[in-house]
Image (tube, rainbow, N blue to C red; front, side):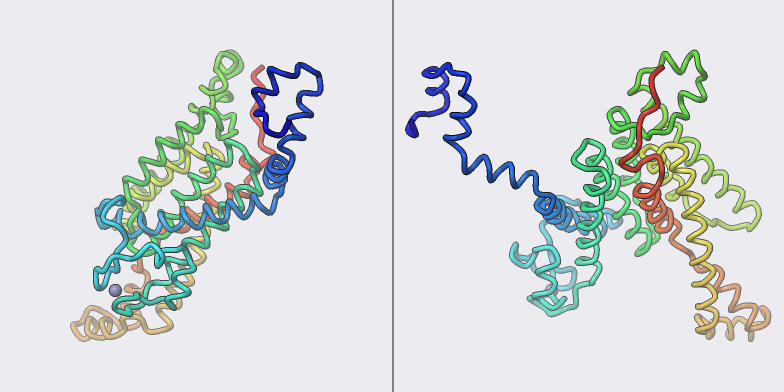
Length: 342
Ligand SMILES: [Zn+2]
């Protein structure tokens, strides 16, 4: 019996116990496999490891996209000595620890950003699984998380929110809305009872994504123009506006609106704190003294003026806020549901 393949067995036995024979025959591997798939710990470990690997790729995006370098080739190199990084030195987190944060060739320190991004991505991936389970929704939030990580770090490092990342995200957000709508209901609400009914499920999702992008991106756009009119200088770049287009397609109108609220609140509180610290610590006080000697005003006033011009990475705060809404917002949690069609 053991030597027979399953197909041979199928033709030989037509008994109702066929399924049983099959499980008996392959008992060990099937049971191990199903055990593996059903063990939450194993799934968490898989999400963690995949997250580490994706995090490693996101590091490539973070360092190369703002510099306009291809993310595919050449392979990883030490930015200092240019020597190619060997595959065994390119393991996420582990290699950085083994090499004690230095290049194997020239001993130049490697930024702790690399292992940090890898670890954070891994934890976010596990978070997505724990919040949304094994579903198509999880895939959507994994993509959203990856895009946000790139934007948060590039804005923090270089005050850049790359267009390529934002527009890629907009496309992806609208595409995902077909299967995993932003769970908003705004599209149906706006279209009213009559037209709302005629709208197909996927159509409502896509419309909600587009509305989220236009309304919340537009809101930030208006705020940017207003700020410029009032303060006479740019308060935020159009990168932030495009980023909100992207967030809108994933979170819908309400989620993206909340993102702007929480993000700007975070930015204001932390921003004022940073400006205050810069002022207290005497940041650029030499410059202020020189300017004062030239008769431009009092040193204290000038120092405050310089400190208050410190450009904050608004995109970083918007990104952190988007994560909060994604994980804890009432419309995107695992309990989210579509509005009934009728
Ligand atoms: Zn090197």
